[in-house]
View: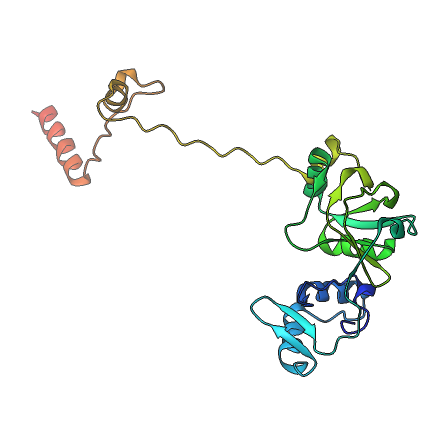
Length: 239
């Protein structure tokens, strides 16, 4: 998978020929051949059981085969791309919205993948939680750098809204993918002690209260005291 044809799974090495373990895990998932495999087990396999065959970078969660059989990405001309009538890629909803506004976007590091097979692009779109976007090679610009990796992957130096075709940015798209964040509640202003409004609020009289007057509750009379009072009243009546 990594030594011979990583492009068939849409796996792309970095400049040091390392692959991301998380992306390997995602590729294994959409091939549906390893249903019970989880990410932690995969890391253990590379770090311990397969260490004779792979070089494992634990801090970055990267891995590369010690014996490499695939051809690294190589640069191609714009005319060579015209052999492909259609290409596909995946774009996160927020990035698609940004592309519609700014038109051009360049990745911070590396290149952006596009695929010659629609199914492969669909698999990665699902794995990444992204949108499936159609790429139109005949609209590529002359300054666009293009690299080919295997038979199924092309790498672009940037994306431009002109040669991409995706869902329209309308109110339905915005409600679904770009929910508006609720504004944070502002705390009540703190008034200094020397302000008249503060003292009037604290020392407001009972009569000025808007709802009801606060009253002091009467203490509950003890039973023996109540009995003495009743006995005294009876004695006065008899006299």
